[in-house]
Length: 123
Length: 493
Image 1: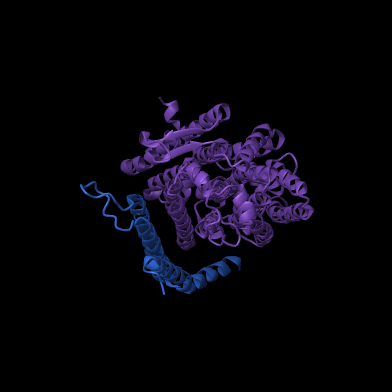
Image 2: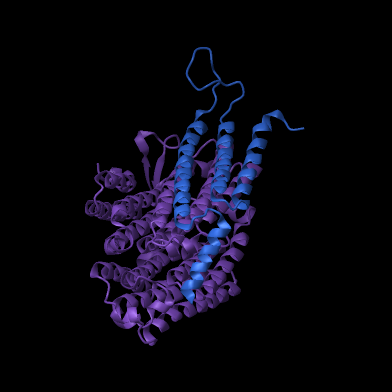
């Protein structure tokens, strides 16, 4: 039996592994970026989960409330999300440029073309 | 007023100068701004190092929020030294940059180059100066994102794939670090490094802390291009514009190695890192493999920038070997090599930048007889190469000397032998270039080449000269490295 309190962490682990697997196993550059995003999202979830305090409400001062969730991890992850968006944007921009330069975004085809260039230089 | 705000200004000046370049959109103005901001950072880093050596660590509370609640910038002898290395290289490289940038990058993209350069500098300085574990992540990503952009500005299309691969690796590495910080926050409830150090030592037998250590160690090893996580590095350095290769090779991996030191020894503490987690045993074999594989692969590279990149992988091995030996002398050697390697790789990549500027290629077959037509450039290459090998009276000798001393101190004579053997490999790959450049009849392009402009030659020789200077007068470099190593081993921040 999985304890309900750990449910989020199991999801985190699953997403983390799935994301990393996609980054490693897929040859398509866009799919790799998708995997990277899933991987990053799992970390966002990890932070958000750890900020939850049982029975706590949103951290806004109000009468009659004494238990609040911890807002700090949430704020941290806002920053990390911004970083993630910037990374994705830059990654996609690079993929567009690669498509323009090589006419492909499949890793094995790119490697083949690079090798052909290298052979031409050596001969 | 100015002096008390120096720690903030150190990062803020280049960080604000970057966007200013985008607003003005003019190449010459951007260059002037970049030059000014880089030299200002260099001056500030000197002042900071002097202040730290005189009065001990400086703590700067951002926005008046006292640590551990607010973000703290904390400068001690370790990071003041690294700050100086990064800022000095940043200033010298930008002085050298202009003709090379004009040659390799299209006019409409040049102001963006200077923007990315300044942001990268700000990020690297920020990683080094901050005393907050999460703040490190933010600056790490600032420097990484801008270095992906810098690399992708290279002329060959391979630069794009190299930048993409670096982006994937860099992001995974930084996210691993982020996971580690999260787990630490979960157990200790703090992000301030000094505070973390205090609280982690009370909870070291929890699995969460161990997992956090593992995540941070692997993530940062990726960033530092420690073997076998180095595969992003050779292409990134080989296909980036020459100026970017100089800058990144001399600074980026150094900052990651510094961060490794910080995490291992300051946050987790020496006893936990070395005894409980067996860090030394894990790092030693990787470092030795890096030394040999990096050097061996370098021997077979026809492209000299790529060869130097593989040599960097080997040199990171020496630094990590020093860390893995895990004594004060070992750390001294590691930190010293961090400094010396910045000098030698800076000079070597600058020489390749000059060659590329005249020949349009840095492949071995294009460089036949280049020693006769570009004597100053190849002279600097020879000095840098000798330092890379570790010939006496060069900086490289001093750090290898300390590395061997550290190995003997622990009775690991085999480690000392391996350091010497791998240096022999360095002789082979440096000699290949010297032979082609001096003992072959000039190729068509080399025969008509002229010496590079003096704006490039002078900064290059400043670095080459520094290699000799710090090989003869070791008081400053060794003194500061020793002090830094001692403070790390004592677990103080």
